[in-house]
Image (cartoon, rainbow, N blue to C red; front, side):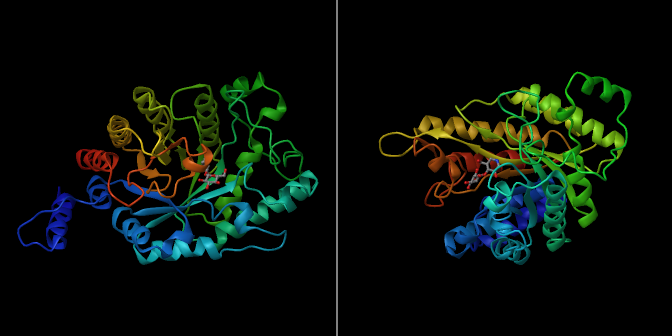
Amino acid sequence: MKWRALALAAAVVCSGFGTGIREQTLREAAAGSGILIGTAVRPLRLSESAYASTLAREFNMVEPEDALKWEVVHPGWESFDFSQADQVVDFAIRHNMKIRGHTLVWHQQNPSWLTRGKYTPSELAEILEKHIKTVVGHYRGKVFAWDVVNEAYDELHPGQLRSTIWRDQPGIEAAASYEPRASSNQVRSELGARSPQQTYSYIERCFHWAHEADPLALLFYNEAEAETVNPKSDAIFAMVRDFRQRGVPIDGVGFQMHITNLHADVASISANIGRFTALGIQVHITEMDVALPLYVNGNPRPEDLRHQADIYRQIAAACLSHPGCTAIQTWGFTDKYSWIGSHSKRTQGAALPFDRNYRAKPAYEALRNALEAGRR
Ligand code: 9MR
């Protein structure tokens, strides 16, 4: 109550009109609800004043969209380049925003020196350990939460780990010097049905390395299409439960929430958030957008914008209904800069809360209403 009163008072003062109460910003509403509201950021756009002012006004958390991926931050075997990510971090510190780091281990956006290097498992393990410790170490005390591993589970074979340079091509599992603590009988019997390559010891090593580099950072496993209760999220759930039982330092799971076809099974999303937070970890919604079909003039239909708003509202409300769901983050904030357009060859887009001219869309109002209603 106190927070809300303060936020409202700030809104009145800031309005510039003695009598008028302007609406709260997302960040004010989120502060009142005790949740973080974040967005992915492209450092090259920070020099655009509308981009920077909207970002600072509306959000209290940022995450570099691409600037912390290997191809940007680790362009040569021995060279690291933090210049782009540092811009985001500096901006966030100046505007009193939290910083999420994304991502230390992924199968995409890796530089060719790494993917074509033909390293042995031991060499690869050494490279990965050095990468994680250098990047996390550089931002120690600044980045409060890291996506340590991103999208390790396969789309085509639900519940199975993806074949990647890190897992089995050649993977780091064959590298010596790691003895995972034994799994519980329950987990061993669940894993028993799978081949040894299906185990996830490469993932847990990454969590240990990140934890050594910054013991206070929150460490997340981040995944796509695991928002609902489904075979992929079942497998992640079993892994996280096993990690917790064996003391692997994992603090949270990120559900990306890229919504397509204007369809979201909110009941299942909520049940899924509930079972993960019951493990004693946090859930962050990490990459939310709701892609809309675009028509002849490149615009979405008004009814789709309303439907989109409803999805934003329902998912934010689902997160807010679980105390362990502690952040809602969109994947960009203006339709001017979103991965959906180029990815879909401009047939889809308009996925974010602000339009191409930084005007708030129905999705923005819906998000704010959900944040205001979701005080806890
Ligand atoms: O938004 C990112 C885009 O700029 C990159 O070109 C793309 C490369 O695959 O990655 C996008 O971000 C992805 C994120 O890092 C992980 N989850 C899926 C996101 C959308 O593809």
